[in-house]
Each structure stands twice: as structure tokens, then as C-alpha cells.
Image 1: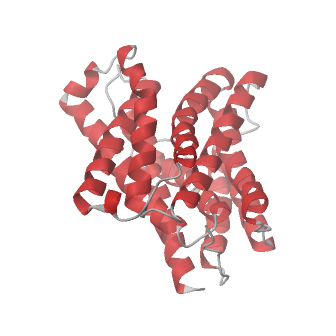
Image 2 (image 1 turned 135 degrees about the vertical axis):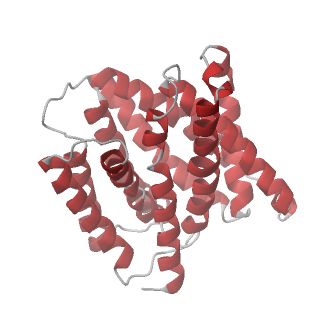
Length: 294
């Protein structure tokens, strides 16, 4: 395995592991904390921290002009992911909504890599992604007792597409700007787009000790640190590989739910964990060269 690509994959995995803590953190939040309010506060704190880090390190002034069109649709997809995912899950349920969103993202990212960069999906990426997606299906209990709502499924697809497009926008911006600055600008923009929701959502829970701890964890670790890792990793691997490796998020979330929240480990969960772990391990450890093309 090439050193640069291998290092990039482990950075993306680290980011996904941090993302996987968000469900547990939300479960530990005060009862007044709605999913939409949590998502908005998370983006706001994360965006502020990322901007402060980029300013402190001087990365905003290191290179030339920004392609603001790419910045606009990159920041927009960060905001639309939050809205589309929560709305999709609300309409069609957690199992179907989560599976459609996280399962569609790697496939869409692979198509975007092919269409934009001309990078044809390799057979090992296809097999590893297939294993990981099937594992996710078992992990979320797909097929046990589900309600399929057409609009909800379309919204979840929109969330998966938003994440894939965000990764593509980041990849483009990394060609002309430092990773810290790219992440800060995109998340700062996403936070600004969602900030009007702070006027309609109850965020009084943030003023409590428990609420503040949850908000800081989500904003600093699960957003600022994780997306800095993701951007650095994306410099060395393809968009498709990065998005597939992000499926370590539900694996982490399930593991934390079992070991910290006392959730029951079902047969489906066990199969899902094994398949997902196999797919991610295959993709991470296979000695191939990811195109760092931007």
C-alpha cells in the first residue's frame, strides 16, 4: 500500500470514528434537544472553531483566489444534508432513512469520481463498498419492520447525494487552498445557512452543564477535528474511497450503543458488524494507489 494513500485512508477512518460518536452524544443530551437543534448547534460551534483554527494558523492568506461557485455548493450541501436527512428519517423511519442515505453516498461518490475526474471504480472498491453497504443494511435492521415513504426515501437520497457532492467540492477546493481553510469556509458557510433555525428551535438546553458538554463534543470533536482529518485524508485518496470509508461511522455508532448505552446485540447487528468491518478493512489495507487527483 502506498504510504500517502494509506495515511489518507486512516485519516478518513479517524474522522468517521469521531462522526460515529454523534448518536451516543445526542442520546446523552437533555430531553429538550431536538435532532434539528442539535445539528444546527453542532454546525455553528464546529464552523466557529474551524474558522478560528484557520485564522490562527494563517491559512486563509496562504494562497490566491477562491472559486466561490464551488464554495457555494459545498457549503450548501452541508446545510442540505442536515435538513434532508432529518426530514427523510422523520417520514420513512430511522432504518430506511439511514440505510438509503449512507448506502447511496458511496455509490453516488463513485459515479461523481467517474464523471468528473474520469476515475473508473476499481473492482476492489466495488466489492469492498458492496460488502460495507450490505453490512449497513443488516446493522440498521433493514427488512425487519420498515415503513417505506416515497418522499422520505427521496429526501434520504438527497442527503446521500449532498454528502457525496460535499466531498467532491472539498476535493476541488483542496487543489487551490489549504485543508484547514477549505474546511473552515465550507462549514462556516453551512452554519450561516442554518443559523435562522436558531430562531425557531429551542436551544435553551445548551445553557445546562450536560447540554454544553454535548454541544462542545459535537462541535469540536465530531465536527471541527473530524472534518479537518477528513479534508487531509481526501488530499491522498479518491472521493469514492473516502466516502466508502466514512461508513465506519455507523459501525462506531453501533459499537458505542452496545457498550455504552446497553443496546442489545442482535443477530442482524452481528452480521452487519462483520460485513462492514470486512469491507472497510479490505478497502483500507488493499495495496493499491488512490488517485490524489484534484
